[in-house]
Image (cartoon, rainbow, N blue to C red; front, top):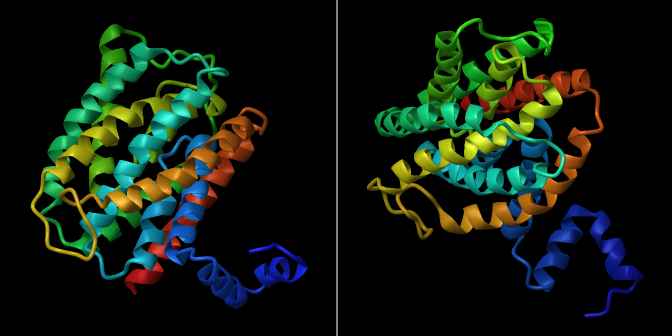
Length: 288
């Protein structure tokens, strides 16, 4: 089909765009999931979060009939793959201290696996309210607490050093498995306020840690027995959704990494808080 001026103008109307896409044999569900993936890829690289704060509420809107556990598990599987992509993209600009990553990752993996088993028995609406409460709390912290001096040392002894890393890991794994977030929403503020890592560097650390955290949570959900739905599933994970969203996230990731290194830390911090509040409001709107 030739792309003349008429067919290009069709794209400026949503109704015409849908008809145009269908005439080209393009599934609208595929288009929206790829667009979601681009947004998730950008957000995860720019802010250091997994993208679950956007993915979970939007998937709830797209698939309101799905049990919340399907949404959480699919979100975790996307974040796992996306974190690998982001970590690779960051390696040219930021040198990550893998000792820090591994201490936090180990404790988060154990926490995520154990919490995922517990989360399966929790009602979907309760999981959504936990999601709202947590991201609102983090947004308030980022908005009203000043960023610490990154030249300070966060610990005075080796005991405190290990305690802070394990604490971050345990909380990350717990929040990840309960809410479907990659854990970045807890990693980012805690690494800023406890480990004094600069905002424009914490994204690289966060994505590296989320590789391990989300893998653990994803495997726990994949090994679960689930109700039948009109999609092929591995436990609670829906592969076609995972792969389609990940396809889009590949493109958003590169742009997010580049912009992260150019934008002022304060702007990133305030924008991140606004993003969290927006996700909370969207979720609450669906619950009321």
